[in-house]
Every structure is written in structure tokens, then in C-alpha cells.
Length: 474
Ligand SMILES: *[C@@H]1O[C@H](CO)[C@@H](O)[C@H](O)[C@H]1NC(C)=O
Ligand SMILES: *[C@@H]1O[C@H](CO)[C@@H](O)[C@H](O)[C@H]1NC(C)=O
Image (cartoon, rainbow, N blue to C red; front, side, top):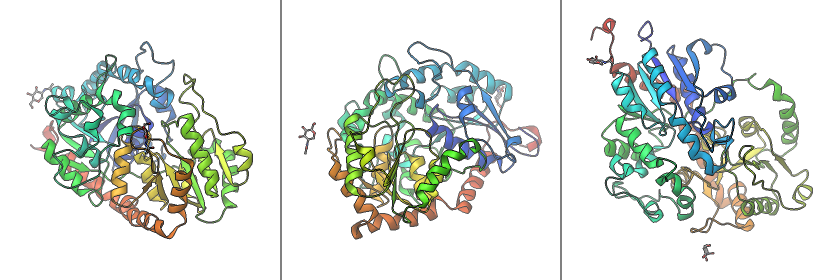
């Protein structure tokens, strides 16, 4: 343990920016209280993280563990953003190769706590051996954890879910009525990774083993938003599930000086638009629409007549050979009214601009939190991972509207895109979505509330350490 009763905490997120960024936000909030954090990832990921405010740097050590090279994983791929979806499983295998160096690191640094993600299912038992207290820090919502269920189900020893249909109904351990379940097309798109194959361990097994061996669960959640789900999680796991707040992204000004020119052009355009009129369109760092989907989204935007700012990923890493392209003539026809950006874009700055009124998003939780932070109405189009369950949770609470789609294959039309956008952005019937985000902002974006969650978490971490030093007197 560090001096003065301060803790030393290790953070070990999965190699996806949707995981690393909330881990980094929690790191910053804990460092602000004077505790020491070791943030562990691979070299290229650490180099790509946003810069820290200088006052926090003394409390945060970035620890670079080189990613073992394995066959089938493209050169230099260190995060999900660097590889097409079907290669993510190799990234997981390479990550499992960090078991030895991670064990060594924990042994040498003997921290008080380790916060780890669902992929390194082997870490919990190592922590137990080394007398290090451990928590599975879930960047997934409590609803996601409640839906995915008890350890026995996840590990497949009891009531195992074996068919896609098993994921489309609310599970029996949820004692209230809910719509939170996958649509068939949503689970079909990730079924191989959830259930595993000869090349990789099932995500559901990883999650089960992770939860089984941790001392306590910490969840990116707040008790005013999904208390019913936090209760389910504690009940099915027989362990505390501590909400740590929604961790809204905090940008450090000066973190992207070199990108100022690009932003200036975007800002000039946004400045010319009517307040609250622009739809911001972005599907996160991983989701890449298929060609058919891209065409319908584009033509839907065109049909809606609304101004839009679209950040479009045409490729997932340089190994991705399936480039997608905009419909013929689209850019000329929407010139002036729309901005399509195929490279880097500062999402927070765009979302915080007054001209933006709504956000068409994949429903990744970080994007949802960012939209709510700036009171932007949410229109959802899910692609992968936990996004379907996030969408159901938000729909249930009237916090967002999902574009209607075919239940079986997920297809949707340009008309449904245009109608959904106009409903949420303009129409009287869609007012509920515009109003609800204002309410949710109080729960998600309030700094004092967020501080309260962190104080509560730190109290717990300090009083429940496995390994207690002599100077503590106990
Ligand atoms: C862990 O703690 C227990 C009980 O305090 C002690 O007996 C054991 O030697 C410790 N193990 C290590 C590896 O420090
Ligand atoms: C939905 O998609 C399935 C599979 O492609 C198709 O058979 C079905 O007719 C579609 N349903 C509707 C209502 O379009």
C-alpha cells in the first residue's frame, strides 16, 4: 500500500477503446483523490489514449505490456479498432498471452486492488493467490449483467443457452417484466463470439469465470437509473455490485492541439446551422455498416431533409479489405446540408456544439452517456456486442427511439431512417425523447453525483482489502 492510507490500484481493461476510455475516466476520478493507479495495456494502446491533465500525471503510471504475437492476428493490431470483426477472437487469444507478464507485474507491485475486465477470465484466481483484492469492473450496464445471468448459466453448467432463440426472451431469474433481451438479428451477429469456437473461448464463459473469482462487482451504472437491475445482479451473484456512476467523458483541452485545424473547419460549418437542427451520425469505433445498410442510412438522411454531420468508418483496420461506399451522387446532392467525415472527428466537441440536436448512434454505452451529457436526443441503430440490450433498456425508459427493423435479419429501409429521424428531431410525438434526455442528464452528467459514487467506491475499497498492512492496526 502507498503512504497515508492511500491505495494502489491496478486497471486492466480489454483492448477496445469502448472499454479503455471508461477505465481511464475512472482512473482519473480515483487519482484526483490522491490514490496511485497503474493503468496496464499494450504499448500502442497506451500511446493512443487521450492525454492526461498535468495535475493527475503524478498519480497515474502507464504500464506497457507488449502483446504476444500470434498467427492470424494482423501486424500491429492491438485493439478491436485495428481488426475486422472476425479477427477479434485472435486478439483475445493474444491477450490471454498476457497472463504471465500480468502475474509478474502483480507479484512485483503488490497493489491493494486490481480492476479487470471480462476477457481475462484467468486474472481473478491469480489475484486470490497473490492476496490482491479484485473487482470485475463492468463497463456494461447492470441490465446487461442481469440479462446475461448467473455464473452457472454463463459457464454453461446449468440452463445453458445454446441457441440464438435463448437470448431473445427475458430470463427466468429476472423477477419483473422487461423487454430487455436481444432481437434475433442482434444475437445472430455475435453468436459465434458469445458461444466460442475451436479458436477461442466463449465470451459467456469468460464473463462467468471473471465474475466467479472476483471479490466484488463494480458497474458503470447509477442507482437512480437502473436500481432494479443492480438488485438482480447482486442477487444472482451473491456479491455486492457497486455502481461507480456513468463516467461521462472529460476532455482535457490541449489534448489535441495538432487537430485544431480540422476542428476549425467543422466548427465553421456547425456555426452556420440552426440551433438544435443537426443530426450527428456515428457508430463508434467498431461498428461498420454493411454496404446495404450504408446505402439505406445515406438515402434516409437525404430523404429526411435534415442537416447532418456523419462520421463514417469505411474500414476496420488496414487488414479490412471490404471497403464500403456512399451511394452514387450522394455527396453532391447533400452538399452544404451534410458533412461526411471519413477520418478522425472530435465527438465530444461536435456533440457539445449548440447546432446539434440529435445523435443517430449504435447505442454503445459511452456514446449514449456522451449524448445525454449534452442533452442530445437519441435515435438508435444497433450493430454488435451489448448494443441491443442497451437499446432495449433505453427504449423501456423512453430515453431513445430505435429505427424499426426486420426482427430476423435486421434490415431497415431509407424510409424508416428518415421517419425515425424526423420523429425524434422535430415531431410533437417525439417530444418525449427530447425531454427525457434532459431528465437523464441530471443522473448521468452531474459532477457532484459522480463524485459521490467515487467516494462511496473508495470507502468500500479501503475497508474491504484482502491484504491489510500492519500500520492499519487490523
Ligand atoms: C496471503 O495471506 C495469507 C493470510 O494473511 C498468508 O497466510 C499468505 O502467506 C499470503 N500469501 C501471499 C502470497 O502473500
Ligand atoms: C424479414 O426477413 C426475413 C429473412 O430475410 C424474411 O424472410 C421476412 O419476410 C422479413 N419480414 C418482413 C416483414 O419483411
